[in-house]
Length: 105
Image (cartoon, rainbow, N blue to C red; front, side, top):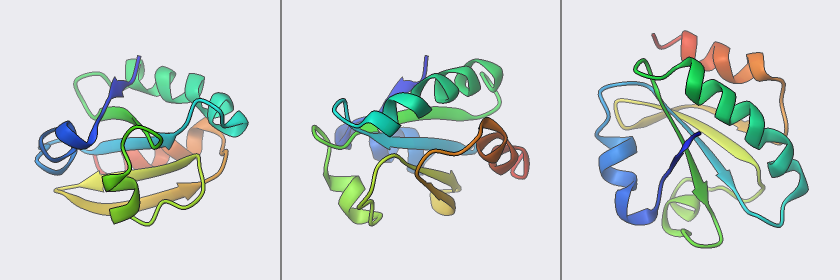
């Protein structure tokens, strides 16, 4: 299961992480987000200990969604050393996400 990230934990979990971080910006009412969710959960299991895989509910946590220009969901951002190094807007196949993480490992 992917880690639930909030505005309160974003700085510590994402920006200060020593590992690559994949963050799925989503909302409960979003159909395409529900398509991506099982893929993100699978990746979180496969990359346990190697990368941080998390989800931000944009309805409850708008600060970082706004900061990073998330206008459409799902949007998946990949962070390395506190910087955005990858962005995928909309539904994509699993390998799109895993290749982005693998490039940083």
